[in-house]
Length: 197
Image (tube, rainbow, N blue to C red; front, side, top):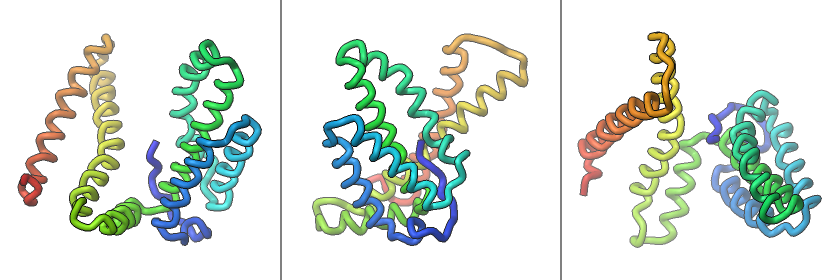
């Protein structure tokens, strides 16, 4: 659900990464505090209008929002069962609006600019936090999302090429093994660059 940067010349593209991150944090807090479903609907509409302002193709917007909709297909009925349909609607609108805003930021901001802004913000804490180490952790986390997707895709393609169908375990085991191998390789690379202390 972390979008890939889409180049552009819109006002959102030109806005600094730090300002976008602060705006995202403030928006998520406001959305979390909105008490009525119609207010949340307005927030979602405004978030979707942001994609139009940034000239993000509808296909990319759908790609960003479909994963959260799959989650809501399970979460919303459970919420409705235990807390009522109004609570389920509010939760669905709240989550979708927040994910849409986060996707808008990542689609209009280079990852390097986001990491630079986070490191600059962490320097305000002085020696209590090491901005470079936090930056490398964030970079690795961001990189891990598409990396895991690629590992799962490669395992599934290899099984299809062999004409093998099987259980979840038959897919999970090779994914786990490849993930651990990748983690070992990343650890060795970090040690080689002096991040082992």
